[in-house]
Length: 474
Image: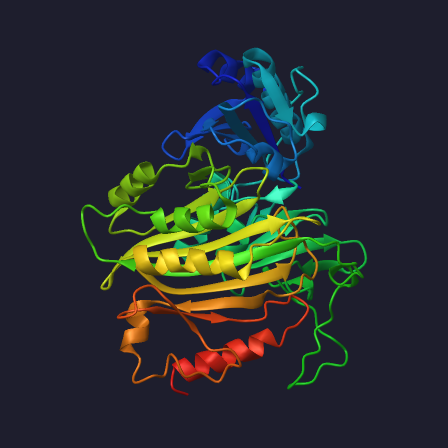
């Protein structure tokens, strides 16, 4: 399995320290570059990559190394340098570890995982051969077929790193699926979970009993004709495939009191050169936590301190192409959002998916807190719609390879413009037991639809579906 090794250093690795790290394989290995020089590779005598090293990333957001690696990090700011060993070559793994250990020793810092970076000695690479690199594959891709690209990850949390982001883009451009294979103990970052496309893309988890299963659905999988597919059942019928579910996906787990509050909303702003983006997300974050986001970035780890101006400048530079961002909170109050900013006929859209985590004894925001956040969005930030859910799930927000109950609607908000466009009193006269509440000015209010929000009562979804059918006139 492919190994990732990370050097966490107090100062930026200089050319001499990088050179010393690259010489971990001796002077005879070939070196090359990819990605316009952003990736340095150590190659065998045929030019096949053994280790790929990403350009160092300056991280100025506290807690990212712990969130993604479970590692103790230097005091911010620090440098994150990631090396990836090619699949199935033991010496390549040793090379990646020796590279990280040498860099951390020379410029001051640590390497993760510690067991992979114990030695500074030169790795014997005589006669070592890497497998042929898949044609046009990114460094993160381990197997490429005519249907999918397979990425093998062995780390605590599969994050939207620069490696993986490039793989997502490559498969999208090629019209392929992306299948991420991990050991049983690995979790997904919400940023990866939210970007994983539909079939044939999937999260494939290795399992001692069932071989492989889908980490999001639990379906037992097998490799067939160039991709992982669901395993057949001897009792299958045309109208009911009866796909077997891995036992590891549905263990009996007691309620430990951990909760998540999930908020998804869309704001549509008039196109204006004075428009500042990110304000809607910051407003919700402040109302629900009492503090702004801690950091943001275009990949994980999120490396930049929170800044509306820098975020806006980046989106303007990329326009008319869309901009995708990840935003994180402090370690004391776990929070993570993904933001997609795009230019449309209606203006500038911000699509936000946000979640906060709470442990046993910590109070989830109340209905009054959510109402206040919704009113700020509706009156100041061009809210179109907003859905709030509460669910039993991990405080750290990562996605485990087992069943977690779905979220239950806590509240739905319809923006003032959408309320105005509905005919008559349709938005106000609903089939729900509790009437909506008006937010904002009386002459042009948004509407707040409350739900019980009990994570053990899934009938909240029945009420939500009734509301959606009613608003659509069905």
